[in-house]
Length: 72
Image (cartoon, rainbow, N blue to C red; front, side, top):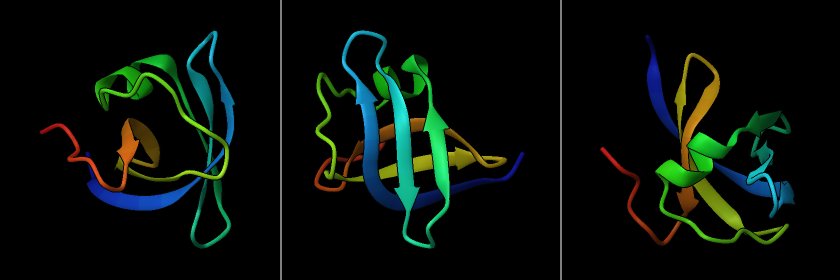
């Protein structure tokens, strides 16, 4: 498994399901699921917020704001 840290911008977020998408700096859009949202310790995400994330083989496994630490 290849794990890396990346940054992007929240593009879509559903506060009911805790799912959404992130637009990476290179223009790639990646979806995230509720477990990835929960792993980052967030309670809410606004469209346009800057985020950082762990990507495991191209899949977001943890997502948080750029000012907060990612979980180990």
